[in-house]
Image 1 (cartoon, rainbow, N blue to C red):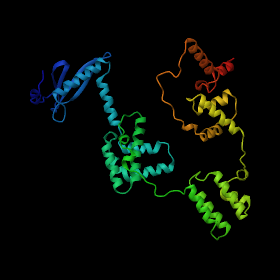
Image 2 (cartoon, rainbow, N blue to C red; image 1 turned 45 degrees about the horizontal axis):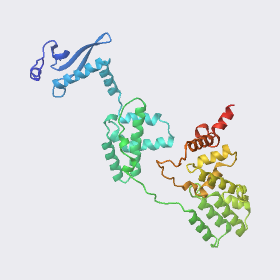
Image 3 (spheres, helix red, strand yellow; image 1 turned 135 degrees about the vertical axis):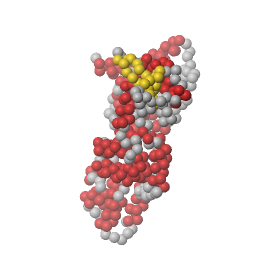
Image 4 (tube, helix red, strand yellow; image 1 turned 180 degrees about the vertical axis):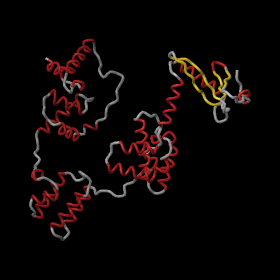
Amino acid sequence: MLTDTKLRTLKPEQKAYKLTDRDGLYAMVLVSGAISFRYNYRINGRQETLMLGRYGPTGISLAEARQRLADAKQAISDGRSPGRQKQREIQKTKAANSFGEWTEIWLKRHQMAESTRDMRRSVYEREMKGIFGRQKVSEISQEYLRCVCEKIVARGAPATAIHVRDIVQWVYRYAMEKGHRFVNPAELVLPKSIATFKPKNRSLAPQEIGWMYAYLEQVATAPTNRLAVKLLLITMLRKKVVRPSRRREMAQRAVQERSISVRLACSAFQVSQTCYRYVAKTDAENEEIANWLLRLTDNHRNWGFGLCFLYLRNVRGFGWNHKRVYRIYRELELNLRIRPRKRLVSQYRWDDIDHVQRVATEWVWFYNHERPNMALGGITPKQRLAMAA
């Protein structure tokens, strides 16, 4: 059996020779003087040799070789070849490209807009290529990435630091989609931990726009100039900041007070002439919808809007639009109801067994005939049976 003292005193000879240890382990002494631990085994009818590692200060010790031998025997007992597994790991390590190579592949093949591709390539070449370009993908840690991002933030470019972090995240995801197993360092570096942004400007609120419009009416200027300023207030805002109904009121006021044509007012305030001439009609059905909603929510306190609308549409046959029903539902503040606590004690007080049977029969009839079933598409089981027949 081999010992560390004996291994240190081994000398090379004209030919390579081997010294056996326990459990099939042996040390091969090469002509160059290098000592390597090896193990011969048979698996699936073939003989293979596994090199466990080289002995020495830069290699492994005898104890580590014996531990690797035990792991190899466990793999053999599981039907796996440790030698071929080691070869695959070596080939995979050789095929592991650097971060720069993976980034070039990602920038070339990943689907994105050309402007986005150019922006990301510019960030990579300016901020990342010199730092991460030659490193292996497995070498970049989340501490190193955070340190690089913090240096960029300290330089006064927080948005660039976020871009650097995002590029690292996307490159690692792309590599993992191609079958490689890496720990994505960007997953542990959240954008909000790098930098946060505060808006430097804001849009005018609808009330402030109204004040501006009222002030413009007092300014002595040509009507066309006044309309141009009003148009700028609308077009330079975010989408839907000023609702169409509000713009219709502005157009109607301009026609009444400034005597301009309807066509010019609609063009200036970006509303159609149909919208300009629209007159809301009071519908008596709104009261009926409200009565139905109040009745349903009083009788069935655990029903929300979904069940109420499905009951009115599928069970009662009303053709009301769901947006209209929901608007009335919110006007009645039924969406703000507080659910009562569920009690362990039954809400019924049974008088006798006949009372229990009667309540159960009523519940089964209601469930089959009037309660919409979400699993059946919002119809009752009775309606489903009728459709199947």
